[in-house]
Length: 270
Image (cartoon, rainbow, N blue to C red; front, side, top):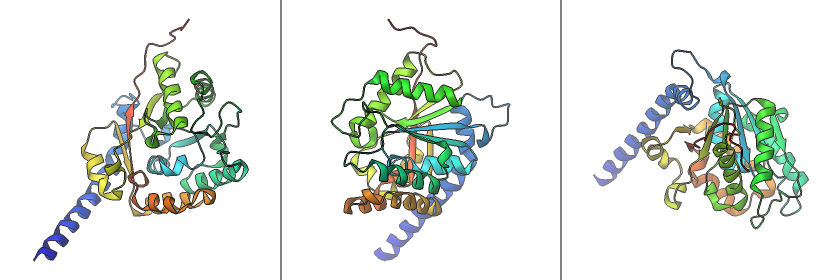
């Protein structure tokens, strides 16, 4: 009897996840419409979205942001990637650049939309202090050059706490608070969750759906296969614990974002 009850609970849970997934497909565009402050009277589709993902290292895009990328690409959004280092911590920068391009191709981002920064003051190093002024300048120029209306990046805890991740959040927050972002550009930060939620795999989906967030993106089995294939492109990074991450990390299945509030426009700081 207890085995039967356990099977019923598991099946009900999986059916619930499936229902959430299909409901999510119908509501994601409306959610993005609200985030982007588009009037509900105007019909909006994914093709209106020009999204920039800002990361610190090759493999960030699939380790942390794969669900969002896959869903945006599915909606025919124009998705670009700005990676602020080559990932040269172990002198593998050249290989990691190619791995990044391969991963992006799997996720649906063509090489023409990928920009990899190689700057001596932006090293791949958890002990390095990336200057907020430099990082914000690089990001602001990229936003203006391509007229993006959505930017996605890390939150203040950077998912893993990596100093390079948190430096990007500080830079984007600086741009937001000083009014250096175009009026039609929304800024979103990837929510860092606690250790338990981070490693309960797809079982975390109902929590992400029910708990408050501005945008929630999650993927089904086919999307997970793409995310996993993208991770496998990063051969230099596939140490044993990466396989555990691929299997158990909720970031391989779901992304939740909060809006980064923006301050007054054209504010001059002396």
